[in-house]
Image 1 (cartoon, helix red, strand yellow):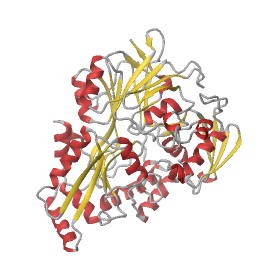
Image 2 (image 1 turned 180 degrees about the horizontal axis):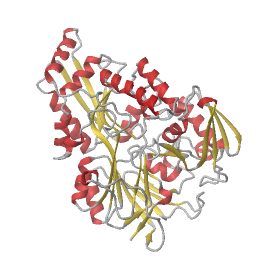
Image 3 (image 1 turned 30 degrees about the vertical axis):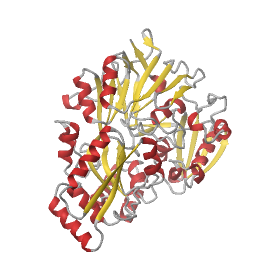
Image 4 (image 1 turned 135 degrees about the vertical axis):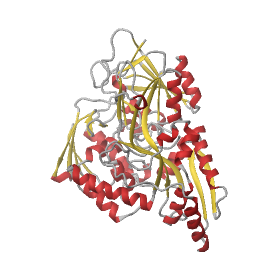
Length: 524
């Protein structure tokens, strides 16, 4: 299942003795054993799905599928979102405080933190990075999130941020969209080359990088946290083939894989591998470009959804238990914010054909390109959807498979698509729903614009009253299943599969499977 996860908040702690399995009635991992100590190894090998086009705050998102895992090791994060509390927790920063009903925020940084080139990670460095996002010439993936922010470094560790509109959840936006900070000195010296030679203040620094083979990082001996990191080296290896990744874990030639592929989780368990699994909000979906033909017509979007049978697809692609992973609502059934009546349409080809015939009668037969990743899993999914259109009249679906960096550039930045595979993973709806559905959202790539949804998201963003939030998010979900800027079909989750080389301790994941590398160790 390959898509770029545009948004979300996730944390998962994997104890040394292993993880849980929701299918077996286990409880969610709640705390890691204290890492380090006698027997801890000095290295960790992490298998990633695909090579990233670069490691740079301007191109790396808080997503394991878009360089976020590597970026977290090199840059660390200002804040990260803990799903157990739904709060933005400090890391490089010490605190974020709101004033004027969320219009003005004060970010306090840890003192005396330095990038690995000796440059101070101070308020001016954060200001430089965020203003770089704002510059259209940078073509940053975080440009929309940084747009309109007025920044003032009032002292070395204090950044005053004035927002274009109040947001009492702005610290979560920082954690999700603006968490990575690169060395201003290194960026200014070589703006284009920085993504190949990144310099951060994280627990590890670049040692060597052979693209499409391995990225090797070494311990940052001047890391801000005393006695951390616990490892001497971390190696990332891009391996697209799912079976090859699992075999590497089983043979002990690799330590860890994070994944959102349900079939891989099942097969990992069958090989006796330790798996931690947590279901999240959101899921895998098709997103439509609603502000251009042919999917500017809601009938076209609904026809696509009605052609498809997600349960049959999930069983075919993910194995015998796959049908259990079908997502009928945009939020997980266990979410306190879910509206169980807001069900995604699907599997009614007669109604779909009627809509296609209407469009054709108006001179608009549905012809479109479906863009997705070139991995084997993504191809299988795309090919399945294509087979479902066979026998239908007045529809032509063309599949386009591109590598990860091309997908990021084409879909995420240029928004050049008609229909595309996508995924979102989150616990709390803020900031993800605002980002992807609000007409001014930082990750609104569909062009979706519904004033009723905007108003509901604005109200939910500016209250901590859970009753109000639930009511407003119910409005959003009802409009979503009516308008269908997204059509979801498979539940979202995060899983960590551990290899047999040693026991991983202190593994804390966030978002869709990123790692807080400062606290990880491997015990032989």
